[in-house]
Length: 459
Image 1: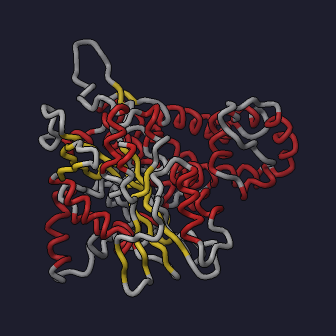
Image 2: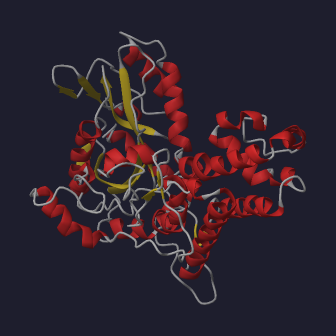
C-alpha cells in the first residue's frame, strides 16, 4: 500500500462515515455519496472500529485501465490509482494515490499487476499497527470498496468470456444474440419487461466458483476463470464493480444515437452546428463541441455537453420521435448525475426510464445499437443503489490521470520511469522520493513493481 503512514495526514479531511440514511417520519433520504450505498454498509458493518480514536478504518475505490500505457517503442507502464472514500467529496479527488505500478517491455497481465495489491489488502483487512518516526502509533484497517474499470478491463479482471460476449454482463444473466457475421453480440430489449434479465446472485455463484477451482467445470454463465478479487473474502464483483457513465452511456449509447442522427440529417448539420455555437455551456468544461461532421472523433465530455445541455439545437430540425429520444437522454443524465432518492420506488422508476430509452432507440434506429455498452445502462439504477451516484465512481478521473501519464512518457525509453514518477508528483499523487528503490521484482526485471517510500517527516 502506498505510504501507509502518510494516510494519517488525511485524518483532518475524513467525512463522517456514519449512517446518514436512518429513516425518520416523513423525511426522504438520498444517495449522495458512495458511503450511502448498500455495499458500503455491508463491507463496513462489524468491521469498522468506531470507539477507538487510535484506529483508522478506510475504504478505497481503485481503478486501472484495460491496457498498458505505452507511448514508448520498447516500454509500457500500468499504474493502479485509488481514492479514499472517507475523504469528503470536496477533497477526495484532489488526493488520488497510486498503490503500485508495473514497468515492463510488453503487456502486463492483470493477475500479475494486482497480486501484490490484493495480498496487502488482505493484510490490512485484519489491521496493521503503524509507528511513525515521530513516535505516533495507530492501527490502520483498509478494505477495497469498489473497482472502477471499463468493459474491456472488466473482462480481464473478472474472468468473463468477452466484454461483449453472449453472457458478458457482470450484472445479469441476459443472453446476447449474434444476428449476423458482420455484427457483434446484441442485447435487444424487445417487448420484454425492463427487468427480464435475471440479476446474478453472488451466493448462488459461490458453489460454481468452487467447482471451477477444482476443474470440475470449465465455465458457467460466461465466467471462465476465478478473478483475483476473490482473494478478498468480502468482495463481490457482481455488485462492487460500478457501471461507468463515460464508456457505457456517453461513448456507448449516446455515440450510437448521434451517429444515427448525423447520418439521417446529414444535410442539416451546418444549421445544427450554428445553433450549437450559440449555446453557453458551464464554464467548468474546458472543451468546446466540435462540428457534428467530426462526431466520430468526439470525446466523452463533448457527448455529455451535447446531450445534457444542447438538445434544443435539434428542435424542429429532426423528427419528433428522434427529438423525444434526446429529451429522454437529457432527463436520464440529469437523474443519474445528481443525488438519488433512496427508495425501492425511485430505483424501479429509474430502471423503467432506462428500459423505455433503450426500447425507443431500438425501435427508431435498429437493434444493432443495443450492444453490451448500451445494455449496461439498464443496470445504472442498481449500480447507484449499491455503490452510490455515478459522479463518485466515474472513469473520468481515471482517464484524466492516465492521459496525463501517457503524455509524460511519450518517447520515453531508458528514463521512462523517472518521467512517469515526476508526472505523478505534479498531479498531487503520492510521489516516490527514491525512484531506484523497488519493493518487488518479477522474472529478472520483466516486471518492476514499486510503491511509495514513506515520507514520514510530513506526518
